[in-house]
Every structure is written in structure tokens, then in C-alpha cells.
Length: 342
Image (cartoon, rainbow, N blue to C red; front, side, top):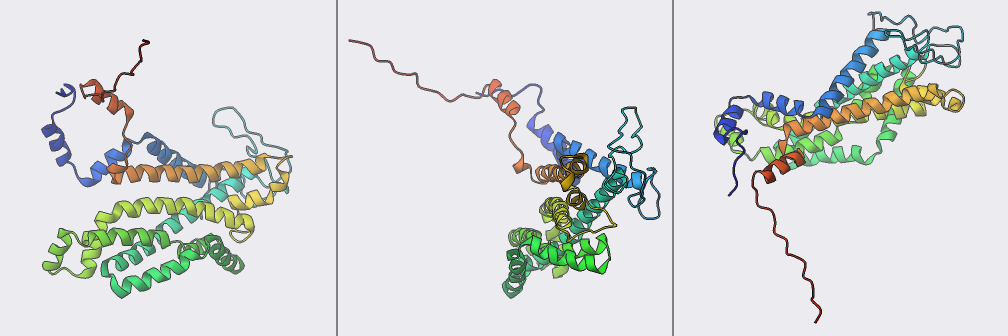
């Protein structure tokens, strides 16, 4: 017989505690239990706030004394100071023509964040609408929308991105138009996931009850079914945002994305790859932030996935040990048979 842990609350008390909480609060508490995701979210927000406050954004000036366009006298390598609250004169050094590299990297992170937010937001909206309509109506509507989705999927993303980036670069419209155009060709994976979720949810009892009550199709899709599929949508959005950073970086590295005089992390690596052995800091600073941003967004997405779907949560060994120590029966193992000599 398995004895219950005296420190754990009775099942009725645990059920009452959970029943008194909203779905959003339960999701928030499950997300807070994932320490890696919480730390990743804090670091991601910290990097974004630090970056936009350093060099400013739009008409808002920053606290850093150099910008990413002004030429300065050459001062050699990085001058990072160990004194608290002091970055030195050129903490990341200068590029070949004397522009402050710290300002260039901060501007490149800003553009990467803009691309991440625009592609993640707009691509999620387009993919959710397409997937919701296809999954709800099925039939010829589903067939047409999914065939269009398949056409975009079979074309490599880097090829579509190169064409889009070339068009945006030649027009000189900047990172915003590049982000919007890339978002319009980055919604396919979310559309397929949302469609699969809608195909399952449309057969539930609450949807039938809404139809009987006279609710319109739009109300059923966006008021009843979509809130139950929001977990899939949010997790897919974080994965799309992480891939958007790598897509923009790759396009800028190849010369099809953001171009000078603007700054991009991929463009900085492309311009300074020849100086890898002589001035490696020109190569490593952009690379560190590219990897950091992509990893942090992915870690946050993992935490959101576990929060929205508790079944994805890994079983902790510590809980297993407590369960065994409480008196759970262990599997019996047969003793090894030894032959006795005659």
C-alpha cells in the first residue's frame, strides 16, 4: 500500500486551488516554473532595452556618444574598461574606416529586433487567418488554401528572401519594407499547424453548441475556437521570430538584405570576414549577438510550449524519487542463478 506524503496537500485541496485560478494565471505560473525560460526572457528584454536606449530610436536620442555613421580618428582595438559603468571610448573597437563598432552592433541588433517583431507578428496573423479558414470550412476552401501554402513551402526560403531582399534593397525603403515583405512569405508553417488544430477543435461540443445558438462563422472561429488554439499560435510565433533573425542575417550576409549605410549583424560579419585573423573582434561581436538572440527566443518558446501544454513537461527525477521513497512498489528482479559444481 502506497502512503501519501504528509507534506503534500490532499487531492481535494489541490483541485480546489487549481479550480479557483483562471487559465491565464495557470499558464503564467507554469511558465515561471521553467527557470531557463524566465532567465532567457529577462536577458532578451534586457538586451532590447539596452540596445534601443544606447543609440536611440527614431527621434529619441540615445546615451551613447557616437553614432553608426560618423567617422572617428582611428584608435586601434577595443578599449573596454573594467571600471563599473564605464565602457571606455570604443568598447568594441572601430571598423576599417573608423566608425565606432559599438554603435554599429547596437544598430544591427535594433534592425534584427525589428525584423523579428514584424515577421513574427505579421506572419503569425496571416498564417493564423489562413489556417483557421482552411481548417474550419474544409472542402474546396481548404484544398485551395493548402495548395497555395504548398507552393510557397516547396520554394526554398532563402530564394524567396533573396528576391524580396533585392527588391527592398533596390527601392531603398529600408528594414521596415524588408520585414513586411519577408513576413508575407513566412506564414506557411503556422498556417498548417493552425489548420490541424482547427480540424480537431471544430468537432467539439462547444462548437456545435455555438452553431445551435445561431453564432456566425466568424464568431465561432475567432471567439470560440481560436482561444483554444492560442497555445499553438504563440509557440509557433516564437519559433518564427527566431528563424526571422537567422533569415535576415543570412540575407544581409549574402548582400540581399539590409545594406549600407544601414547596419545589420549579418552585414557586419560579411564586411569584416577578411579581418578574422587580424581583428577578430569585428567578427565575433555580431556573431555572439546573433546566436544569443536566436537562442533566447527559442528558450522562451520552449517555456511557452510547456506552459500552454503541460503534457510536454518533462518528468522530473526528483519527483520520481519522492514517489519511490513514499512506498511505491519497485519492480521485482529475479536473482541470478548460479550453477553449483557437482
